[in-house]
Image (cartoon, rainbow, N blue to C red; front, side):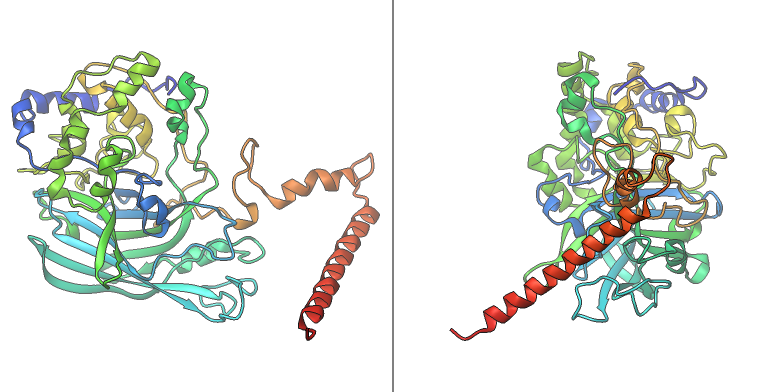
Length: 511
């Protein structure tokens, strides 16, 4: 949490909107107490005790934004499986076959989903007699050398008061982009990514597969808020890790109630099949960074299993948050006065005049005003810096939600101006200019991020010093030494093989 510079223009954009909402009497303390729904979810990288042990069912983030290159459409991205180590074989990362991955859309502000997009996955294995994910270089999604593959279906459910009115299959047996095993296994991963992007009816597009984790932050906040002395800031803790993503681009008029009511609320859930064969909700995600640092341990699992229309039970966690008190105790930054009605408006209702639907029932979800055009020059601080196309109006991949949330939680909207942040302002990977916009996953040949180094565990980087030391003084490689080393390695492998053969013969002898 170091000071982050930003332009003065538009700095008070969200504050001005909020002031108008408060002046209009929308959040009188007595009124807030009577609200039934209330609290929020999180960028759930292991944010709750139970789900931290079930990574394939764990939502990590939800994004929703008007498509910058196709402004009549809305793009929704939901990610699962936190901290995917790119070299995490031989069992690489797949969606669960026994789960329903759901995206919910509330298009009238009543805290219930009117539309539900349901993803179900199926795993296929060509050769179960090998341990390999791929048995040779993979050049296409239907390559016979891609041993483990997945396909998915998408169903659109229309609901009224949580009762299913109709079901429509939007996608059937669409291939999933595989985990990026490495350059030897997948020499042109970009081709695999492009083959996984599919056109659906009515101008919709879909993608599912592995991607670089687009969330950027310094997670060392959990070490007594960056070490207790701000010594632990500026390192993107998620650098080098991947996630499993689903991305869907839909015509905006397909998801909104009407042109007169363009605001939609979006959240995702995961249902896992239990021992009795029925589905049970185990994860839920809407806004970033709330279940992680707002809900206490006693509420985290309960929140993950519940629904927005029941959020009233968590309201106190928002109006009386713990984080500002910790900031005051450790860094002597005075906590704003409670109850925090400003946080209720931003995270539970949407900002009046920006992304708050009429007759809104406060509940935790990502709210997007689809009538606001994409910004030509997106600001990382979104609405807080005058860019109304950004967070908390939906969430773009480039929005710095950590800095925005820290500044709001510390009272930016109630007069306590600050420039708090974690000194991580952008993702380390370049995003795409077109759907699905996500950066390609980090390749397994680079391995996990080498902690304490300036780069990843690229095998060639690791061997570089050794190979260089085998060269002459003028930098020319000493091929004799390298050849000798290779021969020595081959001899070692041969000896191991002979040893194993001897051991097997010995074990097979009769007693």
